[in-house]
Length: 68
Image 1 (cartoon, helix red, strand yellow):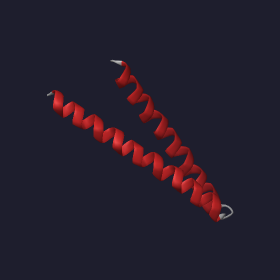
Image 2 (cartoon, helix red, strand yellow):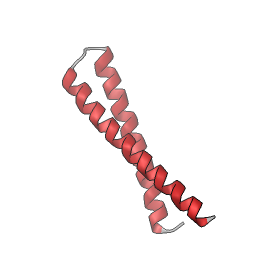
Image 3 (cartoon, helix red, strand yellow):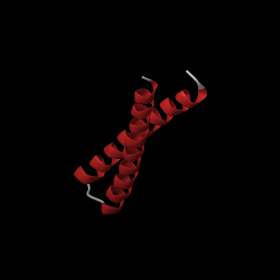
Image 4 (cartoon, one colour):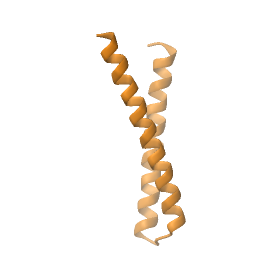
């Protein structure tokens, strides 16, 4: 495993954790005491992290296909 592979795995883990935390925050504020500002901010953060995950996973599939 080279440095770029380790960094990519770190990014995947990081964005996965951020997306999960943001989703829990959105859920908590939407269910208990609906506060639109927190729901919007949490949604933007979660969507951003999910988008980055999709890009990272798509890039890794292209690299794996190119190697074989």
